[in-house]
Image 1 (cartoon, helix red, strand yellow):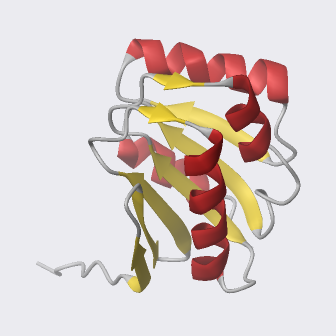
Image 2 (cartoon, rainbow, N blue to C red):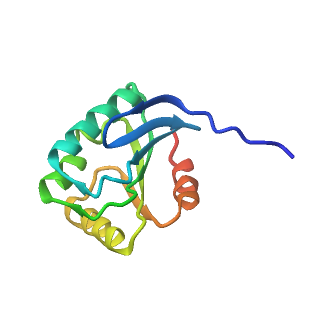
Length: 134
């Protein structure tokens, strides 16, 4: 049996999330205590994500863990051209049905400029993102 190693490159962590590159996908995992996204959180996460990407375009996987709310300004920040730099596609892992339908609202209202899908399982999200590698 061949063992697959998960290699994490460019690991970075702040008080809200962890970021790393794994198999050509930028991984962004919010910490369990982050239940609400605010403009302050969004600005910090976007800046740190851009640092980790190091100017290389790749798909983005985001695990929202225990997300319960996102305000309108924050949604707009995450769908801005600045936030979407170096992202070829985005997959959001939503753990609850409330978050999943909130994500649908984001897609409908804010219309991100990169292909974005919502998923209930990480494996399906990663499979979808693999098709969007440059």
